[in-house]
Image 1 (cartoon, helix red, strand yellow):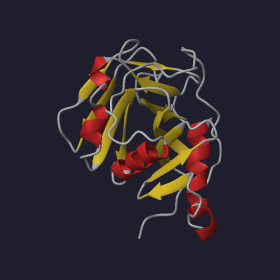
Image 2 (cartoon, helix red, strand yellow):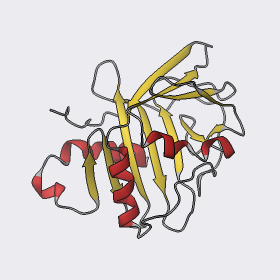
Image 3 (cartoon, rainbow, N blue to C red):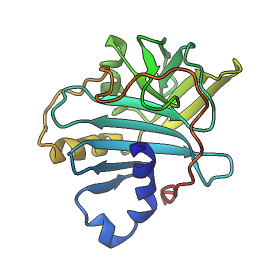
Image 4 (cartoon, one colour):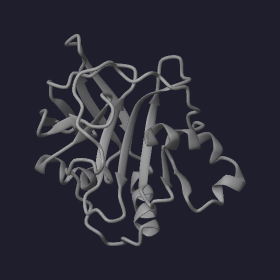
Length: 202
């Protein structure tokens, strides 16, 4: 799962030797990386209550040959309902709703929900100018949850990806289904995988 591998880089990026590697970079609360196939992604995570696992992961990635960015939120420790809408709000503004299956759906893993369709097209333009992002969802027991991700560093991470993929100036649109992944439905949440989280920013 690329989301967890990317977050695992966080602790290593503090090392000068790793920081010098042009394929991995840290931008405030975000980690950015490119793989050998030139797929690149920026990721930020919120820890579980015990602080040793990534409980929620927000990932923004792009394949080098694709126009659209893929935006996903992974609910690793809570089974999110795949029939209830997700909400998205930046800096306390009015929320935007994404209803399954056309506005949001799980692909690859039952815990990985991708934002889809026309409502998702302009998300990145708003996010790169914001400070924090609140994502709300309903779990399988009909309880409502809201998680807040920091947006500081996202703009720098996306510019770094544009540079790595030779796509400077490319339009930042999202909403297409993720390439190479099948849609899933139902199922238990993914097993919590202990991964090191980035050190707190000074």
